[in-house]
Length: 193
Image 1 (tube, rainbow, N blue to C red):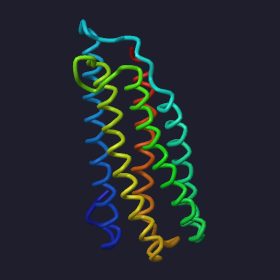
Image 2 (spheres, helix red, strand yellow; image 1 turned 45 degrees about the vertical axis):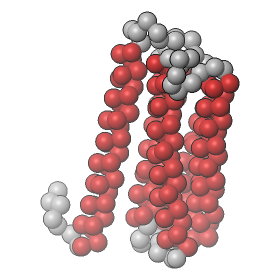
Image 3 (cartoon, rainbow, N blue to C red; image 1 turned 30 degrees about the vertical axis):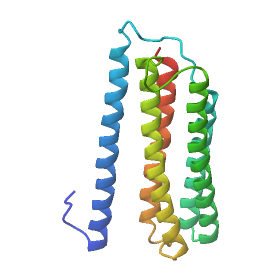
């Protein structure tokens, strides 16, 4: 495919999609590095093999999965010309994103209550990795919520239509990536002792 072909709008859309995928790939590489370091660090003498993940992490997994479905429903509604329904689903997705972040902080509190800290004399390398990986993911979910707010703003301004909903598609792609990434991370932390 010749990327120089097509209208200006098509070329801009391709460029935006490629930039998003470059960003997603770089995030994947970062998390792959942290999970690889986690695996390599299991041979350390101070590795705590039996840490229990907080229940809030499991609840937040359910919430982020539901939020991906609500974003899909928003995109479908906008694509079908049902703007009011699309806006409603976008707000629901934002609410679920906020709930996800709150559950993550609840999970951090549960870990601290169990005596696990990110750093300090009572911390361990595994606990530090769990905090780091989960916290960096939270930062990216916040970035996803900011992009969702931009999508909501544009939706309220009437910028999306069944013929033009690229912003919704890009936002949804990033959101679904964050969803899949969290599922991978929580399964990784649960099964890799």
